[in-house]
Length: 229
Image (tube, rainbow, N blue to C red; front, side):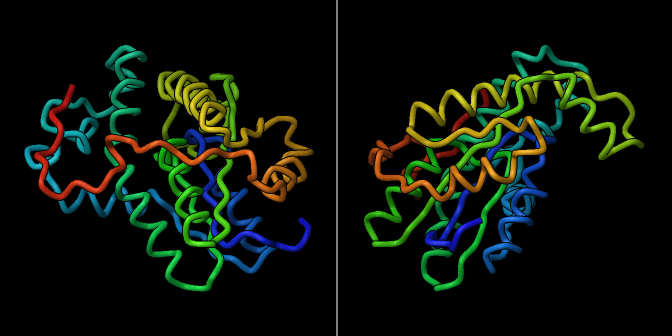
């Protein structure tokens, strides 16, 4: 990786595509540290209930099965996955704003980072003269994702339903990222992923437009939580 010019990187992608490994490598190579957005998600969910904020508890509410991906149609799980990610956009932007107050480079990675939130983060960095970059890893093959789960979580058994949803979510993230002029990097071939990811991060984001306001990402302290679909 050439000399780092950015101050903050957001690394998105569906579960099971190697974001944590990629984020750790970037951090090691550049002297940055990793912020796992999943930790923020868990904290926010612990602080709320399904009654208080249903959009954050689609998968752990009182009516949710233990493994929704095996009980609900993949279209329904994908719909709720996207709804949850969009509900978490203010939290993602909160982390970005906090990181921009300190002169320490960081990589924020997580399944629930949306392209809309990342585009707004890039625009926020531009407005404050800080270099913020965002990139999404993409793997659209459900069988490959299932194999990754099997290698990472052998005690969980087959997770074909989860992998199917993951592949669909990856396609949605990639499409949305391209719509927001954010780079998308295919996970395969694995042998060249690091080089391709570095190239995407080192490319100046001059072509990225200012992100339009997102209904979920704007600061709204007086609205009631959105009802579950």
